[in-house]
Image (cartoon, rainbow, N blue to C red; front, top):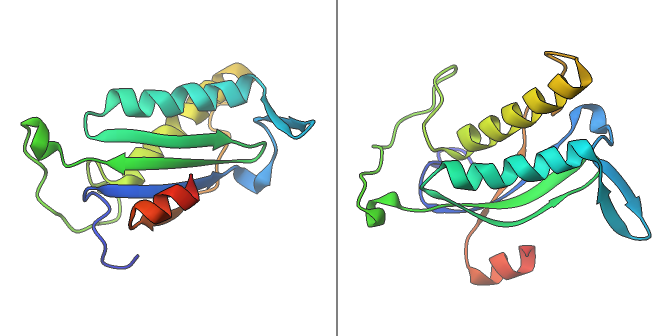
Length: 146
């Protein structure tokens, strides 16, 4: 959303798609998602995202053959005895620490690196460049997305 501070505390629903919508994370079998080794990497890296950042809480997450859906909650870390970063304007090539795009970018990068090491294909793109996000505005919306 234009002008919105995506480093501010809040809940966000994200969808991240694979490059060319390739189904590389597993398959649907009898109505259930069966993760392959790449899908398991995606799951592991998603949980690491929450473990590595004090201001992040993760909500529901699902990996599909060619995309993932997840809820990321950016907490106000001031309540944890730490100061928040002052709001800054986004500038090309200058990521904003703890912003949604920086968090998603780090996740995508970690997944890409691990999968490409296994495939022995350094630099091969796994993800589309951007991702879809939706700001979750209230408890009703959160329940509906869950």
